[in-house]
Length: 137
Image (cartoon, rainbow, N blue to C red; front, side, top):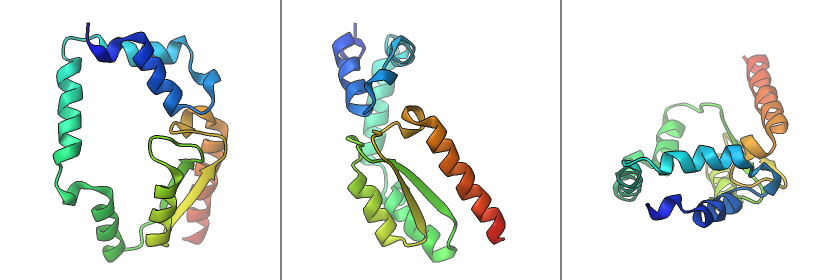
């Protein structure tokens, strides 16, 4: 059995990712834990970690945002959970400050998985933003 598929470790990471603990249910747990039991799970996790750690600067978001900003001010929406512990809100604020054409919307009392913790608000923000783009054209 791999370390990653141990119950306590999975619950720890889910509790870290989700601000609203009521969303951590059996279905979510199974969604995460079942793939972690596959024989290839350890290799896949290792490859993902190595890939993220060793990727070229040209594949990182900061570089890609600079490229986009030099070419055209492409509409860009960031929806961020106010209480995201994986990637804290300060990063989103920094991106919005460095790239003023990036619109940052913050969902209060949500963690890393805002789309799951507050799907109605996430969808409302997305829909309104898309409608606003259509009006501006």
